[in-house]
Image (cartoon, rainbow, N blue to C red; front, side):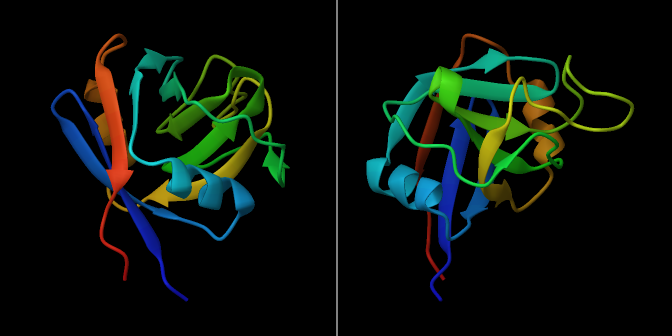
Length: 127
């Protein structure tokens, strides 16, 4: 199966992620490139995207590096540590998210991304 990779750039940070085989991932892939303005919530970067997607296999606890779609805010989320909703060492989104991919390298680089900067998500190489 062909793996879909995306490139994410925000400020001085650049990362690569791999999408899973969910309908959410497919919808986001087809909408690329996407630009947005970063918002932060603890160790989470998120930004509104021009897609309204149904909830799909939602998770209320995520892992470092997970990419999630947050339906209430129509937002693309990158998780790289604890959020204000976290309990103990659990990484919790504000409410359940559709997990549609993962950062392939060190997701904690997103700690350097500041709210208000532009973020760009585009197709990377498939393989």
